[in-house]
Length: 185
Image (cartoon, rainbow, N blue to C red; front, side, top):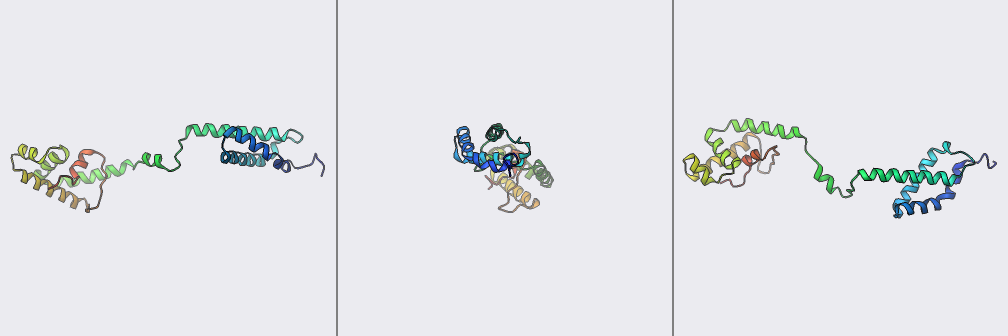
């Protein structure tokens, strides 16, 4: 085989040291430089038919490496480093339809409560009033409001098939306040 008929792939390994040195000068990181050299060699290998025999192999490889490096930099400018997944975990969102389905279930169950229970639950849960304030507004004793709220929450849990450890994700804070067990007597 003469030099003219030599496969240019055979010459790739002769430029590894120079490629790595150039990659380190660009990235200032050995591991990233190694990745960049590997990407360069893969691109050169798969596009070897574009290399013109007799031209400067090192210049061709350096051009591929340089273009790959700047492509990666442009890509990384648009990306956020999140190696441990902490940022992506905060961005996760449940589908909106789940909340709407829960809300519809809640509305159906809430409509089945008697008027006194709905009123007490709305005042204490959604309105944020204390039991004493709600009792005064309704003209009943504090114990009566506590009892109505407690029975209403228990009935909602029963109608919505919520166990003690069940958690219902709702779309609004008012409904969440009505269903919440905090402050229940």
